[in-house]
Image 1 (cartoon, protein in one colour):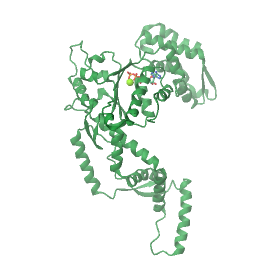
Image 2 (tube, helix red, strand yellow):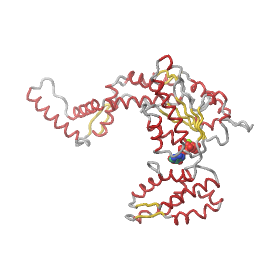
Image 3 (cartoon, helix red, strand yellow):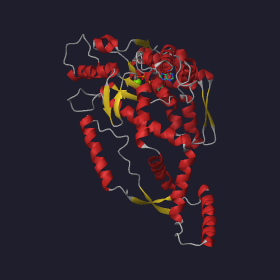
Image 4 (cartoon, protein in one colour):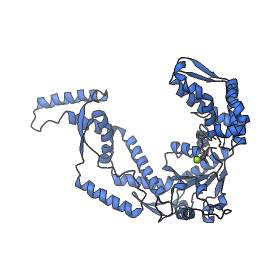
Length: 443
Ligand SMILES: Nc1ncnc2c1ncn2[C@@H]1O[C@H](COP(=O)(O)OP(=O)(O)OP(=O)(O)O)[C@@H](O)[C@H]1O
Ligand SMILES: [Mg+2]
């Protein structure tokens, strides 16, 4: 994945996000620059720091959507966090550093998964052997030749049954994996994590044997998969790889960054901890060492992408130090009627396709006339203009309104095709959109 060129990244995003080409390009370049950096010699590599990105755009234009899709695509450690969730150090709540700890957990899982994937056969064999051994206890060492031949034949027959899933319903006892300290961040600081780790080490040491549990073979497969990776791979090695992944390729998407900006105009009472959160963000964005359960993680080369609508505040309302640390600014365009139409129809799982699939469950074949789709885009656009601009989310409310009755009575129309005509859309929405007050309440 890291070999994707900027063009390919944009092409991928194009499948899901319509328009917003500037934002896509900027992000694609930033990601590619990481790859370029890795090709450099060490001494220059350390001097190339990533340029963080600030995405500005009103609500519902695709900021989070871009991040969501990137996350899916990239095999890099990636998390999306909400800036408004954090509190200043010393206050109750999650401190900002926990985003790096979460990122570390993500990286560990990624590493484990890819290691599992690379050793698929080994793991399958491990699971198969463990389960069959439970069902067919090994022979005592004193058994004679004849017994061994019989045993092997039975073992092979069991293997065949196993692979056909014919043993799935049998009940066996398996030892539970000792892990369980994984993917867990309580939101407390490093000291508490240390304590947690020592406690779980002590507890782990006490019941080293692990608990046995009766489960079906089917369930046992999943349990043993975790156990297999614990036994087959060196945990410290995994952590090392994971740390490298985070330090070289980690991406943190900070959503709703505008919510922690403090608008300069209003002198009214503002939450004092907002600025505190910003100040806590500084060292992390700038590059510092954060204690995680993997070990120390250096944030120098982690890429930060911040996004916000900046309706009530401006980027300049962030404290200057933080503004300076997000040098790349991209503005996302508000959605035109044409773009709304394309969002309705083009993305892989567009709204239209979602509704068609949903009603298909009831046996209804939902068909949209071209003119009807145009009308939906038109009314959505007008509603956005007349009242609040909520971007593509308007399409959802409009579609719900149009399909309300059809959706309600779908079971009575099983086996039929229902066509959404322009006439129907106009009947449902024409009057509503003309009246601003009604629009406010209904759409
Ligand atoms: N350009 C776009 N292309 C395709 N779908 C879009 C686009 N813009 C928005 N959407 C759809 O609209 C919905 C809301 O978009 P998204 O969550 O990205 O908004 P946002 O920009 O993050 O807004 P907010 O500032 O409120 O968080 C999503 O379901 C998304 O699929
Ligand atoms: Mg969002």
